[in-house]
Structure formats: structure tokens, C-alpha cells
Image (cartoon, rainbow, N blue to C red; front, side, top):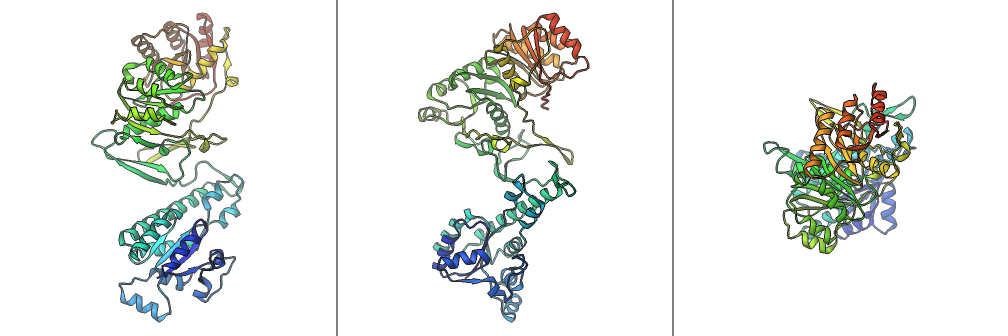
Length: 524
């Protein structure tokens, strides 16, 4: 057997090549890889020796040669192919080990120039990978360092690679080429050559996602579904979760879990979020998980039944005991104590997910957030930058005569964060770091406000002196009057209506304080 090795990422390649050599496999390599292997005492034939043609054009041309591609593409079961190899003195290559120039990492750098990007477009590597993968019945192609151990183990056990293994390696190879070409297309079609500036929205969008699992069905039993992740998922995002126990996640479980996790991780202090049908039905802050859960549950115990519950802090035994008193579909947290997990195991159907919180940083990725949101429409996509806006106290503008207290400002900020994750039209009543009533998804903001009040009443929660958040402006004073009638003493809203003056005057008339954010959070 012959193996051709040409890798940009040299992690583990020496050990892999040494193991191949011990199996009697002849090694062929290129440039820096050949020098590295030779320095380790391995017998390596350089590609230039194989082709009889030196590397040229700064290494741009080295493997683009019939001696290489003939050896990769020749079908062993076609006599004419083998006769052609013999006639031209070409030897068959049985194993190709290639990983590509780091184009994706290169263009991820903010200071990456076009010249640098172009130089990191691999030509010979993808060409060899395509040749080997096309001829998978006879040639194995390794394109990722994670495959070394599996390939080596099978070679050591069987002295060959099965047809199934070669096929799976070929699929992975074509997937890698697709990802690579998609990244190049994304970069180049986003670039304005005259300014060297990149658009967030390239002329061609190439979605690249990896399937995690097939699902039993979609939103409804008659719909088929599957769960995919980004090729490079952000830390602290839902797709990085590890399921510790419970039944397989459903389509709706995943959608609701994402809504809960995105909401809970937006808080810095211990928080609990309960979600039902993609809307938060209870959110609270406290000193610990148990207290946060008890407060969140109070908002809407009826909707919390069969809900998705997320914490941004460890879950201990006391919290697990309290959770055991209700029906929970999915439970998420950064960690669980051993005692809590042991207790949760008695609830075998509860899906328990452990997700590390994102490390934080200056960009969306390090915060575990999407940079771009996508919505499928008929034969097309709507794309937008994700709504990652974070309101700060200093951004809040008091527009009423009455000034909110420091405690009210904190509750306003809390209610505003929650409203961001509630379907529009959204109205959120809050107080003392917990939701008191949530109105979601109504065609009229008035109805959302009334619904929030009704839910608070059903939960026996008083809205007297509460704060209220509206995800968009009040177009008329009637919306303000409804929330004040329910008991609100302080209101936060974007502002920006042509009738802002009328609404502000109404706030002064009703003796409530009002804060503008200047930002709208529609969530359709």
C-alpha cells in the first residue's frame, strides 16, 4: 500500500505516519510535511521525486500532476485503467491524508487582507481530495485529524479498510470540500473590491450545517424533522448541550429549549426561566436556583405544567426536589450536583441538558449568540443581524415628570430583558425581580396587556405598583391606561410614536413614571 500525506494542520501526523510505516505502508509526501516526517527518521518519497517535476510557483503547483491523480483515480477493477497506469509508469495510491489551508480561520481575522485570503485558498489539496473521494471503492481519504485513530485501528486489525469505512470517509471528504468552497464563496461574494470592506450579507449565502439527529417528527406528527448545528457552533449555544438523561428531544422541545436558554443566559445573577410554546411564562432572579424557581413558577403555574425550565446557575438537591413536584419536559442548567442528578434519575422521562455558559467577550460568537438570524419564506430566506442588543441603565431615558426609584429602574431593566424574548405584541408586568403577568402574541397590544393582567389574577399576584415593559411603542394612550388600570406605576417602552407626547402626557396625568429605550424588540 501507498499513502500520500499532505497536511496543513500537522497535529498528530508524525504519530500517524509512524504507525502507517510500521504496517508496511509506503509514504509519499509534500514540502513541509515531507521534511517533518523525514526529520523523524521516516522513509518518505517526496512528490517531486514521484512526478519527476519540481514544486514551482511558491508551492502552488506540486501535486497537480498525472502521476498523482492517475494513482488516485484509477479503478482497480477496470483493466484498461490498470493498463494505462502500467503504460505510463504510474503507481496506485491507496490512502490519501490531506487537510486544507486554513482559509476559514484566516478570513475570520478582522485584519485579514484580500491577498492573504487568496493565498490561503487551497488548490492542490481539494483536487486530490475530490479524486480520492470519487474513487472511494479503491482509495481511502482522510481529511480530519479526528479520523486518524479510527483509520489506524481498522488497518491494524484488518490490514485494510472496509468499503463502508472508505465510503464514510469519502462522504466526510466531500462535506469538507463543500464547507471549504462555501466559505470561499461567502467571503469573496461579501467583499467590495474598491473599499476592501465586507458585507454582512454576501451576494450568495451558503448555509453549512451538520446533522445532529433525526427527530421523530416536526411541530406536528405529519411533519418530518431533523436537528442540525453550525459547522463551528458558538460556546454556550444550545447545540453544545449534553443530554444527561431522559427521552429523545422533540422538535418542539428543542425550539422551546432554545427560547428558554437564550433568555436565561442574558441575566448575570441567578435566574430561572420557564417557557411554554416558545414564550416565557415565568422568569425570576434570586440569590439561588431554588428561590429563582419558586418566584418564576408563581407567575403562571398553569402554563408551567409541562414546560421547559432553564437555570443559569447550578441546580442542587433542594431545587431538584422542588422541580419534582411538577411535570417538566426539559430541564437545563450549566451544572447539577451529584445528589440532584441522582434524584432526577427517578424522573426517567425528564430530559436533562447540561450546557456550559458562554465565556463572554466582545463578539456574538463568544457570547454564545447568533450573528445572523434566518427566516424561511416561500422559495427564499429573510436574513438579518440577530437581535443581540443589550440595554444598559445609562441608555434609559426618563421622559415623565415622576422619576423611577433605583429599585424600579432595576425592575424595568429586568422586565425589558424578558419582553425581548416574548412574542409580539409583548407586555410584561414585573416586580421584585420576577414576572407577575405576561401577555404574548396578540394582534392588539391592548389585548396583550389585558391578558397579562388576567394571568396575574389567576396566579393571585398583585400588580399594584408593578413595572411594565412593552416591546414596542404605545401608538395611543389607551395601552398605557390599561396597564396603569391594572396597577402599573412605572412603564418602559421604546418610544418613537408620532403620539409620544400624548402618551407621555397621559403618564404624567396618571401619576406614573415612564422610560424610553429607543430600541424596539419585535419577535414575530
